[in-house]
Length: 290
Image: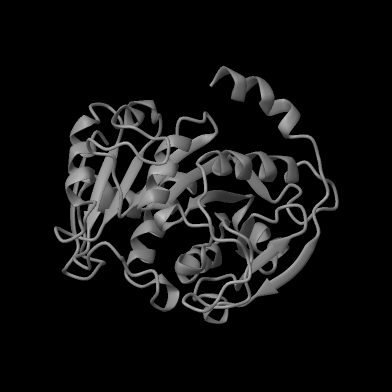
């Protein structure tokens, strides 16, 4: 960790970025800012989901918070999650997903190597966006808030996010259909949860989700950190393939707005007071330490 802290000033040096390609998903999402998936020339192993008009989003929101995302199965593609990630971006976030940009859709033949990925790629994503925030004339210059970063991931990617959450730049974590329990995965171990230093949300697919028991074990380990676990009974696959990311999106966005945009009224209603009256009845919640 000391190595990361020492390296940070160097990693924030400006570097130039160049957009090579873009893709619209769900007509840009249904948030206030039409979002787009972007291929950056100097980030071939990642896909960036962001508001199409960054200037307009920043004018309305201020600097945009950042999310780094690890995929289910630690896959080298965010296509399975692109509806969800694009929807989050349309709400005024910059999301950096592991996996090269792909014009196609989930389930179609992909044009890039599949292979596995590592949690260090989430650190790499943070390094890159930190550098971009200081690159004059770049798309992200003074438009992203490097003090508001969320580590997020699904299933194996959730373990990657837990591992990356030890990085001091991570302010909050969102763990989707995942949890360590007594397992070791993606370089994370059961002890990795003790290295998390910011509020954490688990979004789980109910008792039939294979991550359900692990998430419950994790939940019991947090004695001081604010932690919430929400469940929607759809199983391990979540709702990511639905338009706008389905039912998981509004819940995750409410947490992000609470932790990274200071929208405390709604955030405390949901996550502190456990009031889910704004959500479908199938949702359940438990939380503590708020």
